[in-house]
Amino acid sequence: MAVNGAKGWLNRHKKWGGLLLICLVLLFWLWRGELYLAQDADAPAPLAETETPSAPADTFYVQVRQFHAEPYQARVLLQGQLLPAHSLSVRAQVSGTLLTRPALGQPVAADQQLITLSNDGRSAGLEQAKADFALRNAEVNAAARLRRNQLVSETDYLSLKAAAAASEAALAAARLALAHTRITAPFAGSVDALPVEEGRFVQAGDDLLTLVDVSALKLSATVPQQQVADLTLGLPVTAVLLDGRELSGELTFIAQAADAQTRSYALEARLNNPDGWRVAGASAGLHIRLPAQLAYRVSPALLALDDNGRLGVHLVDEQNRMKWVAVKLLSITPDEAWISGLPDPARIITRGAGFVSEGEPVNIRLQEPGA
Image (cartoon, rainbow, N blue to C red; front, top):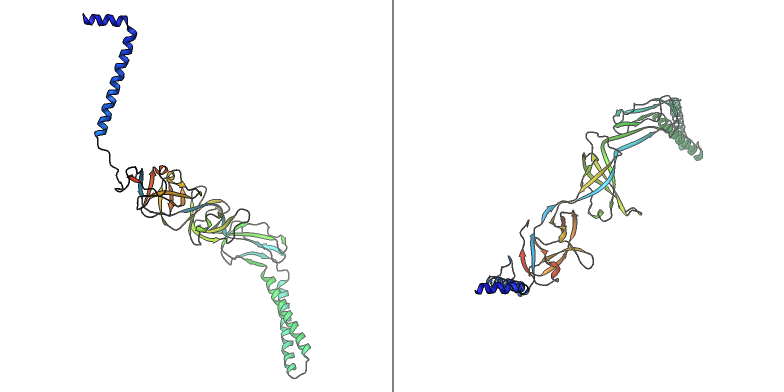
């Protein structure tokens, strides 16, 4: 009967029945929450992996990872142009007809004859200069004997000596003019240009051929003023060609003064080209390997700027106080940064540094490497 009465009451008061059901659900949910809170209060608090025993109870926790210095070899990456180690444009020193010349592309040895010009009476001129010089010398010798006996005046004697000197100069010029009709290679290489044909009459100063030596190459580039201080002569370098091939060498020149417009310094590297690759005149990347040093590999997210814009990281010192330390950035990619200027080992804060002031004591949760 009681059940039937309750059903009847609910049928007559459906609205009040729904409200009563909602109140019962809320009371059950509150009771469950109080039960969980009681269980959490009874459970022991987790301990930090590393904690300062003497730190106050309200000291903030930071996550720290210990970093050790690793060998690091920085590189300066530049773009430059490859040139032959030796390149010479051979020009005529005297006028004459071009009699012989090498073939285009022909390899030549050092001191090998390259060009022959017509004699044009230069051999006869040389013989005449020799005879005149012999005569002038004989006159000076005779005047010297007479001068000792006061039979020739001093002015006449000096005039004869001047004539002998002029004759000697003429003899040297005649020899040089004849020598310029036969041009030899100053170094080993190959003929890269022949602007004149055999049988053509050339004047002094005309281009006769271009001689190049690509057994070694030089790479010219410029380095920004921010990086020139790290460079020294003799550093090993690698030239990377557009097709990926590489040539090795060393740094041979660094300018003392920067360009007034670009504020960059000219430099030059000498590269070995044992296979004689035809790359002279092409562009190439220049990789200069700096001396190896100890550095730290960190995530770029750990780097921070101070109020003056200096780059650094947040550390925990020996007294477990947070400390900001300036660093030198050696290189950076989206995944990692190499820095120097830290003690070894360095306990770097990886999480929580933004909630602590410099010099403030902290509690530490040590992060395992790779975590």
